[in-house]
Length: 207
Image 1: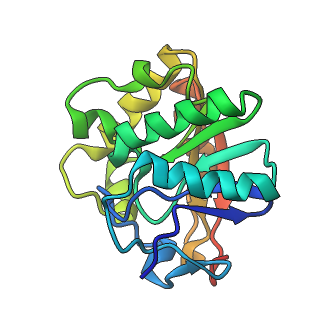
Image 2: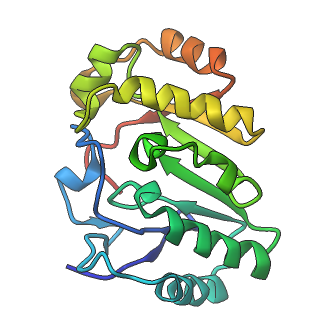
């Protein structure tokens, strides 16, 4: 176990807020290993404060002045919404040129029973949302969500992001154990929702 709240990957700073997630994706890296490029991401506590995260972020930023910060770790970052907002406010105040991206499964509005996207306007520059499948059946098979209607919730969240004018990308993981996704259909879904589309190649051994 560890308490790695900020880590480096490909020259960018990533922020790891929680182990919790509303999905249990079959291709998730955490199913196979405990680290990303040697940095252990399983947290030993869910009680970290914004100051804890900011301290680790600033220590990394002093050595590696990344122009982009990504909220992405072993759990769903939006499950720590208030923490994410507080850390983002610090980054935008202290380092206004840094772009903030949140990699999410798009379930936040279901979790909080309200549209939380307006609260993040001006803090988050881009959402990257996991589409994962061309229909609900495929999504459920690959993402293994822990509640009913997760696919629809994810698409509704995407639309909410676009309605706020926040840059939005939908992504799929391609090539998991030889499995192929209908990329044309998934791109069409993303475009219909007003989002860009990105294919993430499955990396067998992770990072």
